[in-house]
Image 1: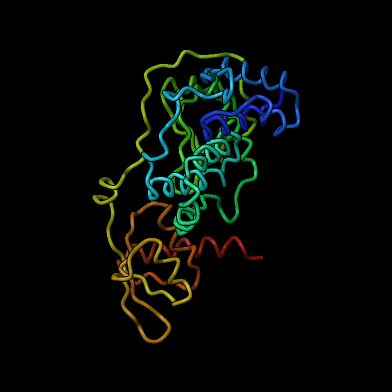
Image 2: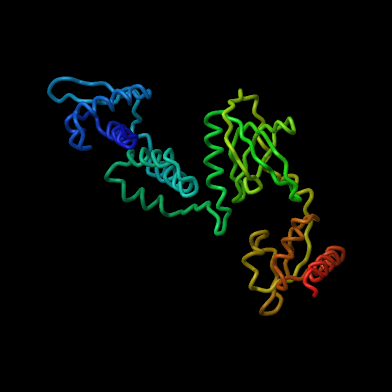
Length: 310
């Protein structure tokens, strides 16, 4: 019994009011007996298909199970297709492919071209230009563990590279700022933790099934906290890094300084992450003030230069 044939039959039944066994058999080049077995399997899966005998009879999905195509507007279908397409480019799963096929089955023929045009007006590609090739198989393993409530075992690298062995109950996959995480209850810490997939190695789905506990969603929005912590520093940049600096502040923060440079009021928090951002601009960026940030930048640059001395 081919799963792809079953899925195709379901799609046809969702799209048509009724279709005969012989017509399905001819379509898939199998015997009517095979089609009857397929219909039994679809019924066992929980999709109510009934058989109507006589002239004009055949198989049909009960109307109560179908969704009226008219409830979706052109904008609705375009938005759904756009969202599913952006996910399927990153998680190539049969579930997403089937979901896309189902949504497309709701599209009236006379509106297909218009909906396709609108769906293609915005492209959302969540994959990175350069990425860790281990992430994709990790995503698939975690999805299996989530669906089946199975424990995950792995080694986790801390901020400074120290590795610890973890046994974790997975509860949620999180995509945040182009990085994948998963939230789970860590048996080592006896608490919920957010794990970054790029720090995970030797990931295995365990046979042991856990009983889900009350779930605590991770805190992902730190906007209010950042507002209280952020200050502004003054940097001078070359125009060649302007596009990168615009990732962190708006054009209103820029003041032209001659033909080649800009003076920028740059949002800043005094931690390694923000100092590393400034250093990533290389010799195309100079911190002008405050003095203590400029002094710290000098020290960090000197430390980097010391690494390359013979």
